[in-house]
Image (tube, one colour):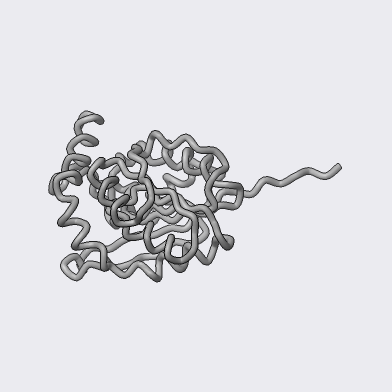
Length: 208
């Protein structure tokens, strides 16, 4: 599929279902995943919610005392997230991330799975640059070996092997925890997720 077509169709899907999506997902209990992530961060850390959707996790991090920047590719999701969280939300595609050494943590919950698998390493390199040395990425993906359009959206599913392969193309971003999880929405309990925590390698100063 043409790259612009998959991207346009996926974003348009989210633009059209924003209210329904927000109402279905706002109550999903992500506290375990959020806790694993924030346990790796310093007090008052700056977090990027990368693919924030309607803002559920952004608001949770703000309520927990973290500084948060949020971004999404869907214009309507950005509008909904800003209204829900009370902060500006930037409309940004994954490939447009250009920050350097800015974030203590990047939260990419069920978002990067909308990239073609061949593009994931490129975006992971951008994430690596955007993290401070020692900064942490949380990302979650649907488990399996499917790739393509599904119910109006583009998905890339991953196994442990294929996910480690993608991260292996970015030596400065090392997975330190990987686990399987069930979907938190009752109507999607059959879905399995593969979750990772990865850390940008710290800079080592050579002392002469």
